[in-house]
Amino acid sequence: MTTRAPRAALLAALLALVLACCGPAQRDEATEPSMAPTSPGAMRLAVVGDSITDADSRDLSGGRPGPGSWVFYAAGGEVAFVGGWAEWGATTAQMAAAARPVPADVLVILAGTNDAGSGVPFAQTAAHLVAVADAVGAQRVVLSAVPPIDAAPEVATELNARLSGLARDHGWEWVDAAAGLRDGDRFAPGMSTDGLHPTRAGARVIGGAVRDALLARGPVPRAWEHSGMAMREIRVVGDPVLRTPCAEITDIDDRVRSLVEDLLETVDADGRAGLAANQIGVGLRAFSWNIDDEVGYVLNPRLVEVSEDEYQDGDEGCLSVPGLWFPTQRAWYARVEGIDLDGKKVVVEGEELMGRCLQHECDHLDGMLYLDRLEKGVRKKAMKAIREQL
Ligand SMILES: [Zn+2]
Image 1 (tube, rainbow, N blue to C red):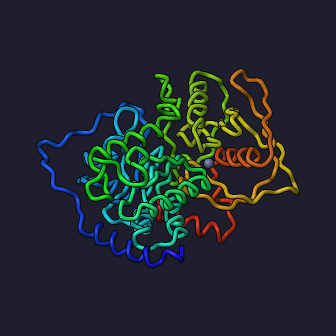
Image 2 (cartoon, helix red, strand yellow):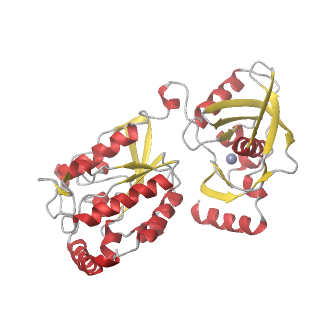
Image 3 (cartoon, rainbow, N blue to C red):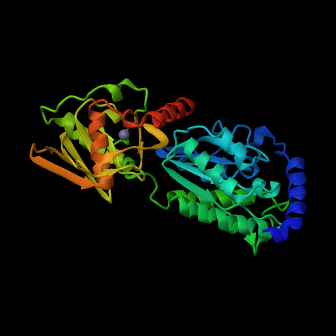
């Protein structure tokens, strides 16, 4: 890097000039095409980016991308665009400052070009992108490659290599959505007019690639494929139902059967480890889990044993406290006894993550949150973060 410093400085000046000069093009509102309609239960998409994402949008944050934005082509049908943030010339620091929680299933980030142009070290870019993902709070994060920079193609190539590593390190998905724009390491003919921003045809290529990546895991979480089975809305901290101890199940009736169905469907998504009934608004003692590819449930669970002298200190999170994780001490092992839908006794036990999950979910049924178990200083920090984010 240091050996290329003079070149980088030149590039910074060049990009600053290009980014400052260019603004969204004027459009004729009367002829503006409209986005494809979305299906009920579509995957909810949030995006964060810069001019490449904002393009000619009049209100991207409000869910209205312009036809020059790739988002326009990624959304529709089984993908519903629900908002986010993008502005011309935005650095990742600005994105991190602007990002807010969005009720989305997936966040797509297309960013970094302006950092490269301003000489921001990649470590800072990486930290900002992590902050963006944390702030938005979507379960699934997809990081996209940036399009070419024709004036200095190696800068985009190097940035993309680093972004791809960042995605891998954080368990995010990586998509080279700009692949179809390139001819070698520069824009292919017709894909850009300024060597930096995609044309409408280019936006369509990026949008199509992002859309393919989003739908590669199946059109929508399985819950939505069956009529009558809905992915239930998760109640978040502040909702009194989370602070109310749940009632013992006395009759295993249709209501309980449908609760179990909802618990199993709703927990069966990436990033979800456990779900208590009151988190979906039902005050009955039941929870589900999704750990190591095994999804299960238990009714009337009782925590009958925890390891006395073996602990774990890792980070814990909760679907009802979205986007936040804090170190929480738990017993290493836990054992729960309860019943199934036939009223037969079941035993659920496990170490590490399973042990943590069992303790966490039993707490929920008693009207507790993991926040109550945080060490004093950490709890203070957590409360502050919640006040700021929710
Ligand atoms: Zn929880």
